[in-house]
Length: 119
Image 1: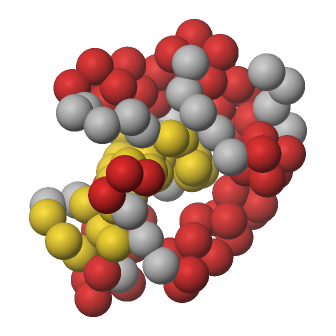
Image 2: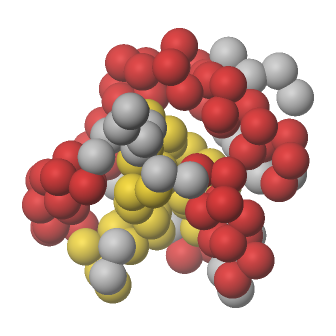
């Protein structure tokens, strides 16, 4: 059986940057990201996707890339993240709820509503 994989987006609001990454272990990745980030992170995106889809997303927003997998947040990227969350919210709401509750990530109210997460 193939392991579930996810695309995640963490917002570093202090610098208006979004990390777009891929993982098969979202809870572990969230824990690592929170532990190693010098600024607070907000989970703003989580949907099913593989490494190829991560690369496609990076290419789509190449014009916003600032450093590695970090991208400048603008309306275009924000709309894309919301669209992808909405597409897959039933599938990701359980894992997102676990990440939010266990690791205490900040999440914007509309994203909480979109993911149907009860904190």
